[in-house]
Amino acid sequence: MGNFSGNAQLPIAPAATRTETDSLGAMQVPADAYWGVHTARALENFPIAKRPISVFPELIVALACVKQAAARANLEIGVLDPHKAEIIDRVCQEIIDGAWHEQFVVGIIQGGAGTSTNMNANEVIANRCLELMGHAKGAYQYMHPIDDVNKSQSTNDTYPTAVKLSLAFALPHLLKELGLLRDAFNAKGEEFKHILKVGRTQLQDAVPMTLGQEFHGFGTTLGEDYDRLTETVWMLSEINLGATAIGTGITADPRYREAAVRHLAQISGLDIQSAPDLIEATSDAGGFMSFSGTLKRSAIKLSKISNDLRLLSSGPQAGLGEINLPAQQAGSSIMPGKVNPVIPEAVSQVAYAIAGNDVTVTMAAEGGQLQLNAFEPVIAYSLLQGISWLAQACMTLRVNCVEGITANVERLEGMVASSVGVITALIPFIGYGSAAELAKQALKTGRPVADLVVEAGLMSKEDVLRELSPAKISGMEA
Image 1 (cartoon, one colour):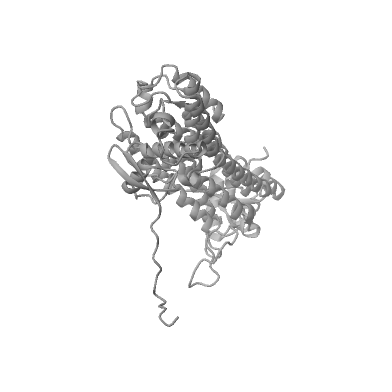
Image 2 (image 1 turned 90 degrees about the vertical axis):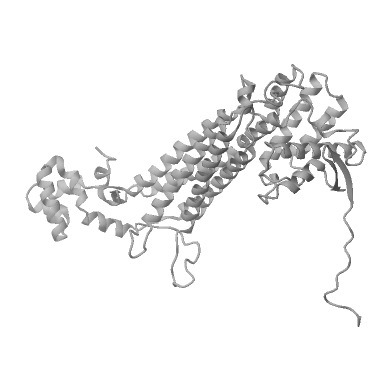
């Protein structure tokens, strides 16, 4: 004990490895890893995003669906040993059910048009198959990542097909959250339907409306985007599986394409179909651009709504102060009692990121050259991240903000009573000229417009009150 040093460290035994070889030579791979040499090279080459592809489980499941469909198609047309096909099918189902995702370790940003991702999948499936067959990992003479798992395939048709499937798998969660947020705004619209307020155009006072109409408008615009996003599924339904390298189907049996697409539709539950021109489909990224544009539209409109919520709740003493957002956290390290609209602020930042991602997708689509677009990994990252972030933004805006919004009724009533804009509703009865003159007087004296109209003998008090009631002035009653 007397010779013990607190800084001493026990020697660390070297981790066990196995040797794997590719066309570039040999590499050491962790002995317990299900991935192999191609994945190991990718880990060295692309330490960029610091995020593995497994952060998007929909992509891993989609890859497994594609590999499962390929195995079934190869079995059907008789080009793959039945035992190998069966065990590949079994392992793919394990991955679809959630197993082995942690073995998908390559970075989401990578060169090679997704080759590293495809090989990561091939190696994990092959080594898990070997394990089930009673062989050691890396004993590829019994189950080969390329000759067996990747049979009849190329990265250039499996990867874009998997990306499209992953987007289709991720979209329902976004649609669910967007629908719930739409419903939350509509519920507030019903709650606030009898509360009058001053409408504004160009940040200047306009004619009256109800707070309920404003919130119902938010719900309507989100409902429109729900519909537009729902329609994007068709952009993801056309795939190039069977195209192999550039669209000619080289190395694949002529019967493979139809069988693989049919099996993939059955496995995924999606209404997918083969592209009519595989050469075009392998090089074109137009569907990703269209999907990205629709995603950006939803994000930007949600940010606009968030900005409106911040304006309406500004103050609480020196701003508009029409509504109260739920207080979620202290707003300042120096100003006591300050509470900021942190939830709408976060939502807008998500929208800005998605707008930037749309530029990335556009540049990547344009950068594709000749028979292949090499930049689909960053397209996949941009779109999958955007879907995930937007879904979570909708959720936090609903739960932590919208559902707890209250109206400052007295302040709203006071602003309506002092607003000269209400006189617009009386123009059919007193004429534009009289309305303009009385509006000037109201601004100069600060007196309510209704009192000036009655004093001028232009309308009775009863008629003015009727025409300026919430139902009439907001257009809900003819």
